[in-house]
Length: 442
Image (tube, rainbow, N blue to C red; front, side, top):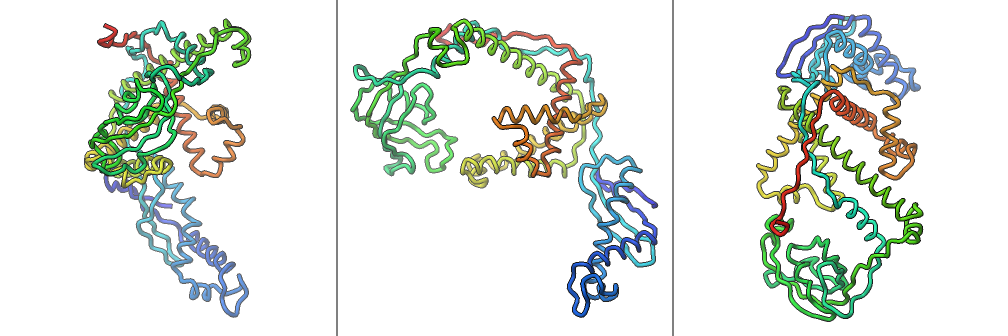
């Protein structure tokens, strides 16, 4: 087999190859016999029609296409291997000359991986900012546990406060018209954790049961409904109930009933361990991110436009799928972003970053000889199963039907191992940063 390489543009390579006539003819005959097995030709049983009859019935081009499918896996793969090409797309045939009894001349194009110039990625000295120790972190975590087991009790002798839950009826109007989806009966709202329009929950504070009043708010400029963006609105309110959260008494008896622990001390020890572990995880994640950023900043790669275009489409598909789960279609979402040109520019920037990161990770994994072992798959699947709350075998069964699953999983494993490699082969200096005090705290 003879091959000839020609650079088309950027990272696209054209390969011309010649396949000997005897092998091309053998593949053609095999293809004709294969097609004859399943086509219906009057006067002949399946598989018994002469080749000339099959050619007239389905056409020579159809048989040649089938023959190419027989030949290509071997010869394209061999051409790529012989020329040491690192391809990232499926080969695309651009031309061929197929005549029985003659050598088959074939030309195809492949896209190769752009060359990455790595900067230093070992023995770096990296400063990493981490939050200073929060002296009240343990108390907050314990309070969170207690809050989970709190009871809700009706309030009858005072107005609502900012930590209460209020049950109320409301009806909203903007520009004199009822707001679609802006009315409800018996709606329950935790005033301390409201996701309503800014200023809404605050105006429910200080009212008693059976109070009827109006709330005036302004929809945010970035609100998803074009008609309501930046518009003032009035909500008619009627308070039905006020509830307060009452925390249980922290005793050994309470702990034994509500957790896997027997005493308050055991519970506090577990909470301390959890808080400390979370802090260490944050430290490591910040370190990995800082090291990787240093490596990215010192490395360079020329990314062809066609790769960026494909990644942009991939990003759009990912976003569209997530939005569909929320009942939002892609076109509506894009319009809600305001400036479509700026939004598309952001997509291109995000796609470029993703590609560069991926290429650099792949380059490091090859230089550091990082391999993906069978045990890595088992560990990763077990971690994912734990996160989803399912058995590993059930997860494998579910994702095993997706042909891209193993490829995606393998890439995630490589990413994790490269980050771990960088963490272990560079020096980190942690710098604690205290949060700035607010005006009230000052």
